[in-house]
Image (cartoon, rainbow, N blue to C red; front, side, top):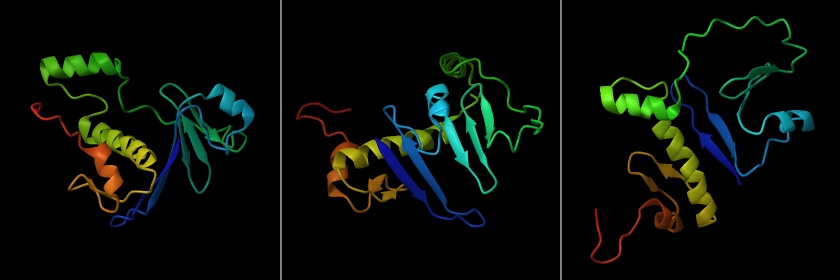
Length: 152
């Protein structure tokens, strides 16, 4: 599946386009060699170049143009791992590296790609009401409907 997301401009922040590739699909922008080396990750596309990144690798593209680039010193501490962070946060209340303010919105986004795919149509999302503005078909996948006699 390939899902496209369009976010409108907000104040001084410009509009953003996000494309999510799932199930082995990859951007056509990558060379065959890059596709083989990068089975998952994120490709940020800017006006002057691109950043291809995963949890442990970060490459500026085109590599020839940025071969002399000096990386800044990291300022976010390394994660002890998703599961360990989660357990530690539950036990102590300590923050995680990727908190719910960030991860919740990211999860909502990719799940909405699945909703649109299953509904078979583009959806326009109302993030305040947690509803698709334009798709009755999407409702079936957004809110689970329990059988009679069962509820939470």
